[in-house]
Length: 618
Image (cartoon, rainbow, N blue to C red; front, side, top):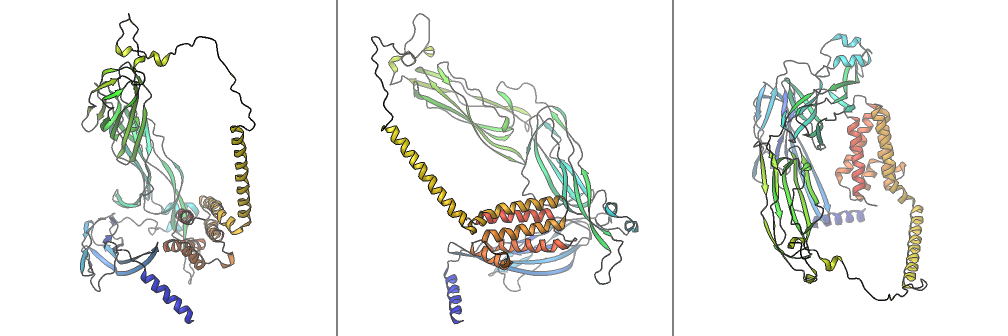
């Protein structure tokens, strides 16, 4: 026992000797919903990433709100040791539950706190309180006794108001020029708990060139629509470029949302367990509205260098050297940058003298698509070879585009270049001009390189054939065969050794087997079979840990998994995340009223396994 105490003391001393990274910047922030309904309780949190001085927290006065609870103080800390450097983080959170008193725009004032004698304040929180006109809370029975008379899906539909789930198409503008982008967002508005979506269909956008935007990082928000507060979620977002003038229609999108509704049960209320209500999944098919977009044609009188570019652009040119040698290669580079329909920008025309050989244009681009449009650049390289010596003038390169902001065409131009081509030192005397035809220098032909003089006299030919045996080629082929045989032999021996290592084989197959079980769980999720779904998720997660770390099933516990993850260098948050997923699956497997959505649990489990595969390299 004394020996164990010495070991623990030595470890604590070693940790204390590790260099502690500089403390992160102190932040004190407040967070709450931006939109709430009158009579709806909500939470306000004040988060601090450092240890506060004692008795220094001062909450705002919360004018216009009733304080139902608070402050509830929670704190947490974590220590990470990476490459001998120890990082410690501390978090304090002060939580209040408020109830708005009146409708309108109300601002929660700043909270104050002190850390090491320095006072920090949060920013004021503006909150919009919406009076929904006494509308009943979504998902309740509104006191209607007839709901208890219905059964199955019909009863659930009776509890679901027509505007509890909406799908809207929100466009950034309804009048644009041809080639000018507009953004359309298909957004879901929900006032009930939605557990899944089915039969999702989006339009084909006839008459538009469509570019889908990334909405993976878009979070749920609260918005007011028709005097009611909704939870909103962006289903899909597109950037549209109209390809023709006139009135174009964005067809509706449609999907089926599966809502969880609490309905009255015909079974009697148990005096001990309670009851009297059931949770049912009710499908509701929603459809967005049609949207008409007026596409104006581009004005007449476009410059000759206009090729359909719409937006706002700049042009830079990298010109060739003003003095080059004949028969040498050079490049004329043009880069067009800006925001607009860059994908459709074509290479401007470059006119070169007749004695220059011009080759295919090389195009490179860097394009970024965002909600504001497509931005970046397209670069065009014009390689050429000057065949005749002399002084030549290269005309400027022109690029025209239509600027919707100015409603006018804009023309960009490079400067003219005077190029001096000196005779080729290697073959300058081989250039001849055929007399009597009035040819200029630009029509010179390099006969010394294109046509060679025919050799006269008898042919002096001798055989170049040599036997293959014992030649350089023979030894090269023989060495290659021996090297290939040796490589195959070594690889085969390595594979045999690895196949005999059962733990290694299980670890490598862990991800593949887990993916198969995740696919089975996804099928159960699509069939709305909750019990089978959570059972398959548990099999996938526990089986993955057993195979990955070669832990027998009899010894597989949350603690053993946590210790193994810690030993492999996985952050503490990931082990806590595993325990949370397992606990959530255990509870939801036998609790129909659990709040967790199968899609969220499935995404969390797949993401956890993917992250562990990326962290642990075997």
